[in-house]
Image 1 (spheres, rainbow, N blue to C red):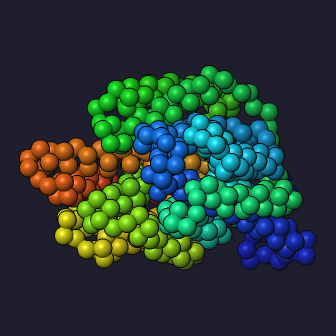
Image 2: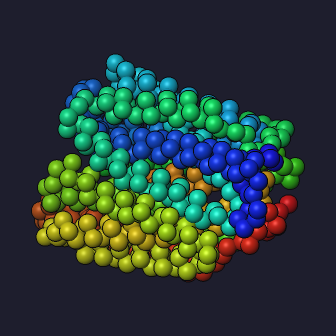
Image 3: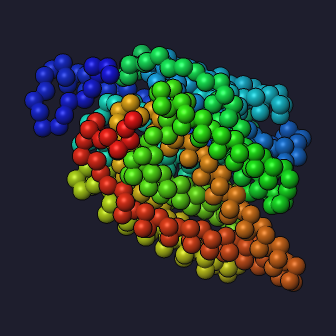
Length: 491
């Protein structure tokens, strides 16, 4: 471990310690800004796809690859970051990640056609996949356990506000400028983060020699990539039952089983690409369960509400994006408060309340029909966002805080991987149920609007039922008094 640490609250601090503390806050601040930019970029593309089909002369199916390829790359690279964070210093990893992201953004901005734009998105995703686990591991190494709630609150702001403002910013840009400006406006921010981070980022871990296992990488690529690709196809219109969806899903499941067996063997000698001993911690395991359900609810809702507003209520894309904005901002505003409460009382009460509120919001959305008002949708999404605000900070803090320091990087990689898988699964579940039920209603004589509304309502029923599982799980997530002394995830 590096000597770059924050002082423990309540102890006397020297001028040197205060200087180190200030430097560490700058390091984390740069990582937070970088994470915000890359997550914003991840969600900014959705609203632009219809414009791109016209400007680039491509089909809607081809345009979807701009999102699918990004998610696939993330799903393949993130599991490898557990190894990378142990093998290499913090600073070169940050520079590599932001260089890849900036290069991909530049390629996308000047792309003459679809193929080069797709390459740019893949390069962007390669850098994005490293940034989030790097942020989480750095925070766990720099911030004392007594203050982690507040810092994780700041991270929750990033992961909640960025997806919320992404569609809104995209809609605003496209209403005035060409689609290239989505990348041109992000590029200088990414370059500034790269330059500033190159000067400020310090190495906060001591790399150790770790054997690289190519077989694990191949299995991870087919396992996580197959699951994300298969789930994304099942969640696309017409994807249900298609070989293009079920075949990669089956390959993904088989490869993932083999990946788990391989890691179980390698971790006996501390050579696992992704160390699964993190799941020996009960708190970590139940946190991942709750995090999965929460991300499924968030991504599924973000996908379905635009369908409802545009296809049922006939509201334009800009106002659709604006609907999602208040919820994201509220989540961001609540996150620091939730972090302070977590530091004082721990996660259990916050998680129980959050899980109940999320479930209540989803149940309220099961009452949607073609006569529902804009304000009902807004209230439902804001309520859901409040519930998620009570969940994210405690889950991040308690899950990683329950691990020994040498497992932080693996825990961070698992959280990032689950975010991608849960997002794909939530989207697939909600859209597949919506499409299937809407087709059934249309075959029975319902109008297109009524069928779509009914399909969306049924999708929220499935989501609401799943959300109930998070409530009992919340009682099993507890704060670890001292993460460094926790041995539940031990050898």
